[in-house]
Length: 216
Image 1 (cartoon, one colour):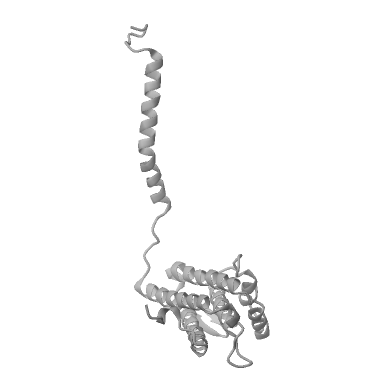
Image 2: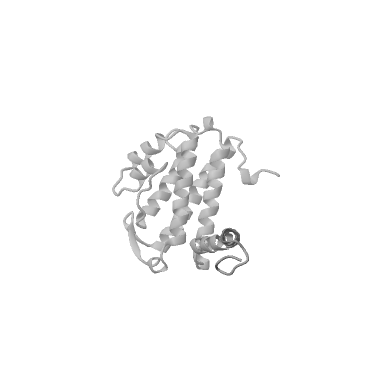
């Protein structure tokens, strides 16, 4: 017996308590961490069916544009069907730049990262077309073009997902005519589809089968 009346030495009792505490802490830690993770990774709020349709249309075109850009060999990026029109690479860069342009009319700021320099031209007001053409022609590296496309398209997706519902009916002047923000989002997807069609035509002329059309 110890002076406290216990039949077990105090040192053993202290060690046992620490051991039990450690086991208990290890047991509940995953539960605690899981709860924290769930709290910090809440699912995105649901969006309306119309907004989802707009997102699906844009996302489909963006995914195919990026897949086609990856499938085209870098030595084909300079190919153009005739003088005075965009090359393969310039079409891909234009898809990215024009997406940033649409985003700018919704108040999106110029991004950092791969698309920064292109955004500086496309997202400013009062640009001249020769500036656009020069900016597109200046980017020739395939890896850089793919990175710019990826970043720009993600900005477009984020804009469609996160624009407040109250802003959708607001009007903005877009190249001299009024358009609602909802119309701007739809037009952004339509414009991307237009140049995706152009890139597909380029690919077919060069005997390149788009990845989604290849036989499995």
